[in-house]
Length: 210
Image 1 (cartoon, helix red, strand yellow):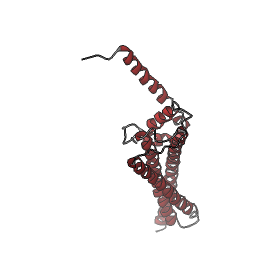
Image 2 (cartoon, helix red, strand yellow; image 1 turned 180 degrees about the vertical axis):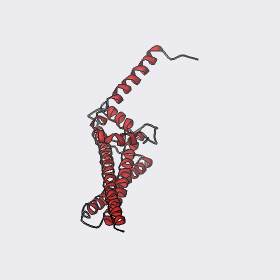
Image 3 (cartoon, helix red, strand yellow; image 1 turned 90 degrees about the horizontal axis):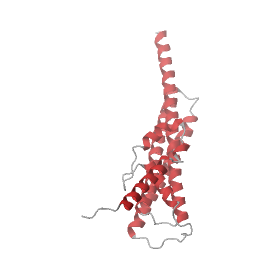
Image 4 (cartoon, one colour; image 1 turned 120 degrees about the vertical axis):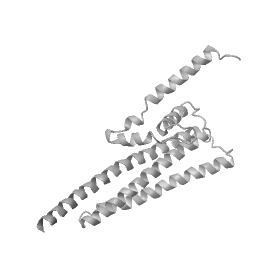
C-alpha cells in the first residue's frame, strides 16, 4: 500500500491550520454584544444538514471561500438541474416564511405596547402573544439562514461570484434578524415578569383588606 507523500501531508496540515486561523477570527461573531451570549450559545446547537457543520462555522467558511473566487465570474448560470431548481424554491419558501413571521411579530408587538393603559390581565395576554410571535420569528430567521447557506453548501458554484457574495450576506442578514428576535424575547420575558410582580402586589393588597 502506498503511503502519502510528506509534501501532501504538509499541504493538508497547512490547509487545516489556515482554516483554523480563519475560523478563529470571525468578524461576524465579533459584532455580537454581551447581550447576545445566549444567542451565540443557541447557534452552537444549530448544524447544517448537508455537512454537519455548525451554522456560524459554515457561514464563515463560505465567506472565506467566496473571497478566493474569480471576481470576473459574473455570468448567470443557465445549467441548473431540476433538483437545483427545486432546492432553490424550497429555500425561498423558508425566506418567505420569515417575512410572514416578522409581520405577525410586528403586529403583536404593537398591540402589546398599546395595551400599557389597559387592565393588567390584558397586558399579560398581549405580552405573551408578543413573546410567542418573537419565538416564531427567531425560529423562522434561523431556518431561513440555514436554508440559504445549505443551498450554497450543496451547490457552491450555482451562482456567479457577485451573486454568491450577495447570497452569503443575505444569510448573515437572516442571522441578524434572529439575533434581534432573541433580544426581543428577553425583553418580553422581562415585561411579563414585571406584570407578575404587579399582580402579586395587588393580590397581597386585596388579601390584606379581608
